[in-house]
Image (cartoon, rainbow, N blue to C red; front, side):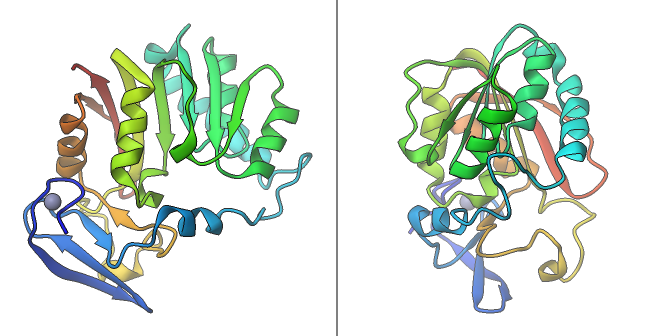
Length: 238
Ligand SMILES: [Zn+2]
């Protein structure tokens, strides 16, 4: 086995939470569930609807206002651009991008969430299904994928999808917990986002940038985060 981020083959034991064991790459510090469940096992975790119906989504009012604030920060890169939110849930960010002038699309594995999104935001475009089987037959100017990459066991497939869905000078905005942050609680297993098996891996700024570099992206900007989160904008340069 080699590291999913840097291909190094040396690992150390990192943490144990209940029955879940995490290893860490000795070279790049990427920490991951070991053994790693396969993607179809993980996708089944998201089959349950968490109370979502075609007409109801939990905390929709606060999601709506938060999405508008977030989309406003990204306006310089999304205005009049084609945008895809991978892992869009009920479509709140997709709609916020649309309200702020983008041609907005969303993809989510949860069918109920997409059903809600299509009903609530009929001017946006939505796709349902796992990212592994997604093929839009087109590219987008901007990919937004927030708090998703830590759920993905098939990391190479996810990165290949991002490459397929982008062109030269496309932007990709990723948010994920930041294992390198000084705000991470000790012990790490007490961190609220240290939540296996939903969260199967943890990055820091350096190894996330290394991963995206391998696929032709460079880091453009790191946005501030009050807690222990990474908010990174990448640009495709190759
Ligand atoms: Zn590594």
